[in-house]
Length: 269
Image (cartoon, rainbow, N blue to C red):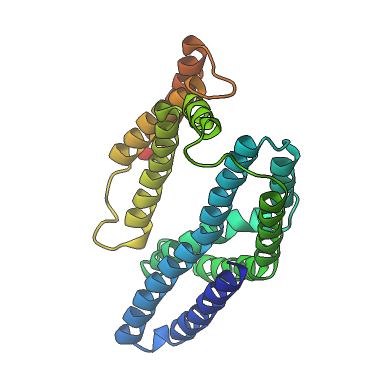
């Protein structure tokens, strides 16, 4: 996986180099500007997809290690080792910065084209996104290799119950009892969509010409509702530390009302 990730990130950097060249030539005419906008959008989408690979990899392997530890009866130190490599690594903050900056680059580029933002924001974000991508290129593969070595070591030193045995049946029954509640998983989806609604409005408002007058209120209200719902369900159905209904919904409603006030203030700008 580390080799595949290196190849993908290298391809992204090459694509970005070409997009930067089209940007330097964008001032030569409308056709050159349109070509830069198209290549920039495609390059950013491709980069975001590549930046999602480590999240999918570490999320999947994390679930595998956790399930294997429970099934084989290994101690919790295996999970702690895996988590420690992530949180203590240089790659950890860049994993989040790279996709965030990559998402902001096309928004700032479109805002520059419509003169909604100062000209220097777009190139500054391009440089920052490229640097974060370079950090990922040199740091993330090493963490992936250490993670693979841990998984191999765990599989070599421990054994899980064989299929169609009483031990496996007991393990499956135990896993079903401790599975994440569906409403807890739904809370994560609601929080994600709340964030995405704001991103969509930012793109329409600052990244397009024909939709610049789109009101923030529908997007803001939707984000507030989803945020309140997500926070309430998340606290109420947390499998490790569930909150009482009054506490869970009270905190969620308080933050939702605060966000609603922010939405109404933004509407007046």
